[in-house]
Image (cartoon, rainbow, N blue to C red; front, side, top):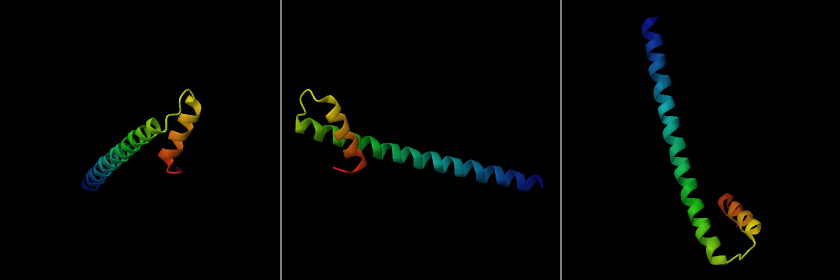
Length: 65
C-alpha cells in the first residue's frame, strides 16, 4: 500500500511539472503574438484613437484580423 501511494505521488508530481511546462510554452506563444500585433498596430498609425487601436490589437491576437 505504501509503495502504491508513493508511486501515485510521483506520477502526480510529474504530471504537474508537465502541465507547468505546457503553460509556460503557451505563455511564450501569446507573448510573441502580442509583440507581433503591437508592431503591426504601430504601422497602421491609429493616431489618437486609443480605444480603436486596443480593440484592433485584441482582435489581432485572437487571429480575427
